[in-house]
Length: 259
Image (tube, rainbow, N blue to C red):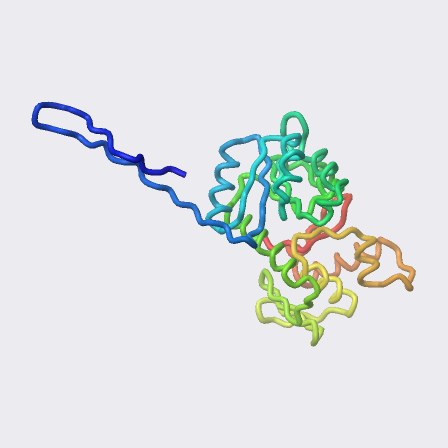
């Protein structure tokens, strides 16, 4: 924090003129509450770290940072973050390896890990999710979009067992009790399994679900269906509500996209 000096320095300019240098202005940051979420920012780019720290602290988060994977593994156990924002390409230890090592520790089993990267290659996303990532955000980072993602994680934590009767997201309204879907006010009729698949994905936007996980949650363990069944149902849902709602993460599965 920038603070005022104890006493102003007097600079003599002439026998009649004294100049008092202007004291630096105090920059105040909100003080995190005792229950504030802790976020660890891991990136080797100091400009990105500064940008994220500023915006996160302004929202009331408690923030710590590390410049590479090795440092993150040292800071994380001491800081105890609820969320880790992790760059992929870093010196010494990259983000993928760092994520795997963090997930091996029971302390970080349920910690949200969000990857930040400028790399758009498909294999980067696949590797990130296979390593245990919860989300994947491409650079350049838009602070408002990032804060929206973090707020979604917080809502999930505050009421993890809650099931919304109505989900309104990205132009869609999903009425769970009435088994009805509306796109900008227009009713769309979906068969039961297609509706359940859409509602399940939309209830946890940005979380990636593998085909086996979707089969277990939508069709259950007592019914024998092939993994390809999920792909077919996703295709049918896309035909009716639009391609942009459900995103394919090749080699991993599907997620509901709000971007």
